[in-house]
Figure (cartoon, helix red, strand yellow):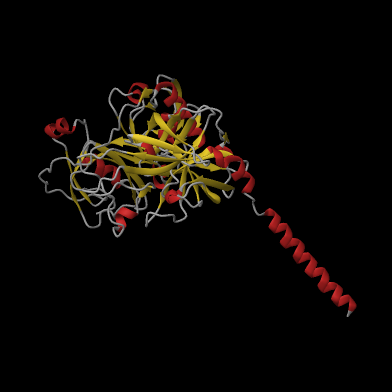
Length: 472
């Protein structure tokens, strides 16, 4: 019995030791908060009442609206209710002489900005510059010898690593929340220039512009957005990497604005089917749909159907990578890029232009054309050749008009679309006649994967077709 009691005691000791070791592994945020909390500030803004209508946030019962990513600051009230207080957010001191980083949407349209410290001191701030594309703003207060944060390297963050946020959710100043890095390099709707850090740190209205710390007490991001059905925290928070924010603030401080590169292309993602059609080893790169005439891309010899795989020495793994890389490139810089064209890589040289304004492709289709009595092809489409007037109107030299889409159609196109190019096994063929298209389709197996370049209004896109109908 003595040996049995000894065995139980040994097992109990082992469990206790393991529990003690696990307890020691749990993070302790107290030192971080003590050291860095004083550098985090509360930002409130006011705006004088205007006679113009005040935008409202649709009711939370609207599920489609609630699916969108939303800025997490208190919204303006409806018409007829014009209190002076406009928004509440957070920020953090980046230099002892009073420069503070926050979100652009926190200080947008503010007539007066008040910065409040943990010791209850308050200062009026002025906006040095704000960049809506990245949602970064630099503001300044007249003070000295202020506590400033230290910066970390967000590229060294690991998924699963602990991170901490300090801010003022719902006005509760210097609230501390913690979680882990859920993902890196996230692309969000309408946010092409920021590779967001995704975390599960609790972020709510008022946290906007506050810092995201790593366990070394270094700022690695600015808390900017949440994904929510309710307007509150649901476990999906997004932060702007601090290296992106610091590059923006340097330009704001020096010039008051941010210069970004542009090359003048419309692109789309390369999926598995597109990679197969273009003869690419795997899905990667940015597929060029169209090129702006006279743009840097046009002058460099980039062609529609090219797949950009490298830009200025950086790999383009996803189409979302290209706007970030190009945007971060200095306008006027002469760079090399690599494209995949007709089954082979090709190197080109390009001089980067400067982004001036958003250029969005129109979505309206061409004017309806009178259908012609033609047989459907193996795509399930009835097509016809373009007249000279149609070519002049659409400003294209070739293509086939889609007059009818049969119920068994294999291609996701619409009546009024124009088929410009067919890609099969890396070979690109410009479509100029119905007979030519039918001849190409007749030579293919039923299981063939092809890609069509489709013109719709002023926009173009690539559509993949998996398999054809039986030969008639």
